[in-house]
Length: 382
Image 1: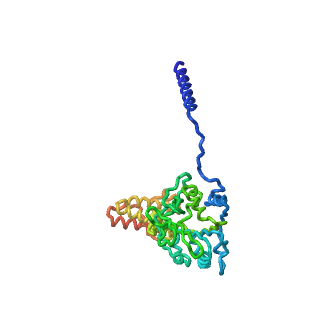
Image 2 (image 1 turned 180 degrees about the horizontal axis):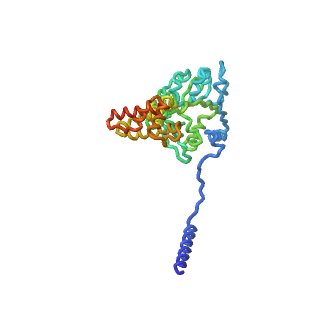
Image 3 (image 1 turned 60 degrees about the vertical axis):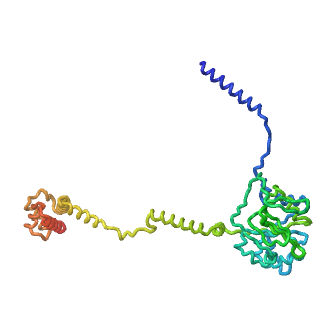
């Protein structure tokens, strides 16, 4: 009884201690970002569109510009800025040939480099050949980071004027050589963005649009960069590349040795499993060993190991069962009448039948074999 009271008292004291500890804590309400709302997540550039809209600039996603390219000129508002994924040029020869004329006449173009430029042979396009720059691809760069609250790491600085510098995190998937205008360089001195005049227009070559995505627009000066690029424009027309290679093509481009090794491992695994589960076709039933062959094999085994007596006993049993089926009360007859009855049913003489029925199994192997052979002939003659 006392132990029960002590336990209850300890439980009460422990409860009071926990409640007092919780009450003494300084609680603070905090909001933690765990993701975007569904309306924002639908488009990777939703936040960029909202930023531009707040500054009186509209964002238009044009998926059909290459299809609408006319033989004479591009139907693009000259007061608009065109953001173009260079891979689109590989799908439209008309757009490739007309783009230079549109920029020369005063158009403003943001030219975005594509990771598939080697597969699509972008270096051979008409417009890229007129830009006069050289692009070096870096294959070992992986930059897809979707951390919501991770601050960007500055890797380049763009000087707009004497008093303004934009700290940026630009893709290092490409380096640009022979930039004829203002270049944005990394700390190693390599150019990752190039801004230069082209005729009466302007071209800005960017390694990617990652700084303007929902995840990175908030970090560093990426928002300011977007506003600076769109300064003086009423709208931005974004032309994405909508065709992507399948995963096998990506793997092959990344490492064809890995793909070949993987295929060989799959083939070997299938062969290993197939060799254990047996043949893949139905067995040939006609090629099976007959039951009579099994019987002969068993008889040969008994003969070779000196067990002819077992075989002879089975032979006699079979012999008498056949005789009794044809001669009623055969066992009740005398030996002479039994021999006579069997002689009447077969072509054997009475004396031969009596000798076979009265004789025992010889000891000599040759005589034993001949004796069993004659007895089988008598059985088969019934």
